[in-house]
Image 1 (cartoon, helix red, strand yellow):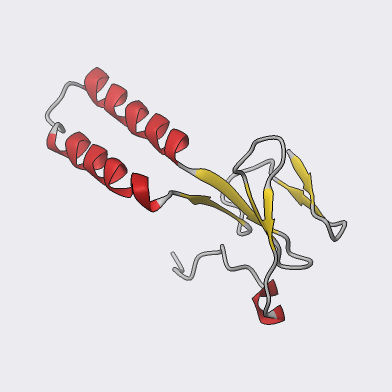
Image 2 (cartoon, helix red, strand yellow; image 1 turned 90 degrees about the horizontal axis):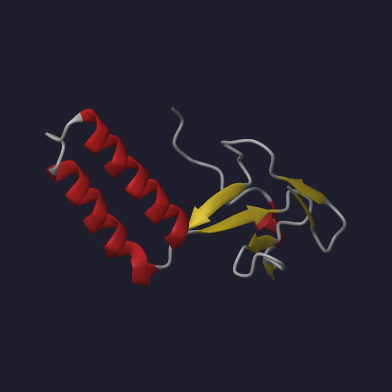
Amino acid sequence: MKIRCDCGHSIVDQTDALPYKAHLIPDQHWFTLLDAIDDAIETTTLHPQQQEREMMRLRTLVGRLSRAVWQCSACGTLLVDVDRADPKRFRPVDSSLQSSVLSTRDKK
């Protein structure tokens, strides 16, 4: 998928682990997700097929509760996938935020 920022830059989303993409989970859904994770951990004695179903249930839940967010590397605008047809744009007031705010600080 390619998204055109208002500044004209193309944001390409065609692979995993992008430093300019993140997934946003609204706070109103945060504990729903944490409770589902707890539930899956508590049932780790399940048979492999049941474990697979639990993992898929969690992945589906995360997909349903989260929204994709991309940051334009040219201007720093955040594009939030609130409406699949038209991501909502949020522009930084401070030009120092043009570097990626979505990339990890954790060096693995």
